[in-house]
Amino acid sequence: YYVFFQWAYYKDHLMEIVNLRKGGLAIYGGVIAGILTLLVFTKKRHLSFLSMADSACLGLITGQMIGRWGNFINCEAFGRYTDCLFAMRIRRSIVNESMISQNLIDHLILDNGIEYIQVHPTFLYESLWNLVGFVLLHFYAKKRKFDGEVFLLYVAWYGLGRAWIEGLRTDSLYLFSTGIRVSQLVAIVSFLAAAGILAWVLLKKKPAPDALYVNRKPAEPEAADGKDTDD
Image (cartoon, one colour):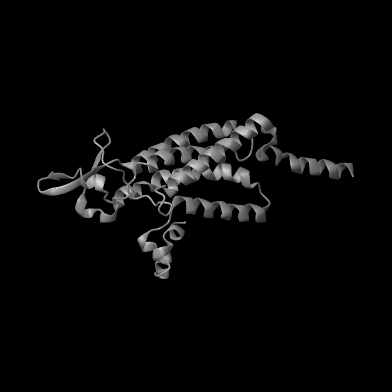
């Protein structure tokens, strides 16, 4: 969707759409591609998509937790100025100027003739948020009541964290000229949708663990064997 919201530029620079050296991959695009791939895979193998998604999201959130440190290495995806306990200084000369907001310029720090920006390490916030999420999902997975529950919890957890962390960043993509951050909007909608579905299924459907795919699957061959014996 990055290309979609920046179409005024990319319509005249079509080859840059596939120029991976300039970035452009958003996590939402990666997740959507992963979901579509999993849908095709489970359809072809006659497996449960929701059950597989429950397992896959643990690896996904682990990848996000580790991947955010790439932002630290590249000196990008940081937040606005702060003097809090976790404040991080970055030498201005190694940062892409398009990421330096007026807020950061107003709080430039000069140390031994070198200019620094002091920022919220949002990559760290999100990495720690995902670490906590992984731990919670890992232990709750053993108590899940329906297929897809862990995946929905992942979507709700990540959406909730991304919504407030995105609000700190200086490099957000905006919804045209509305002033609304696209990633923040997607995060909020994802959280509300996942939380709503979870509440509806748990409170209205009241699912039983016996209906889980992993509990049903072993019983199917036994049922088939019993049928053959009767015949």
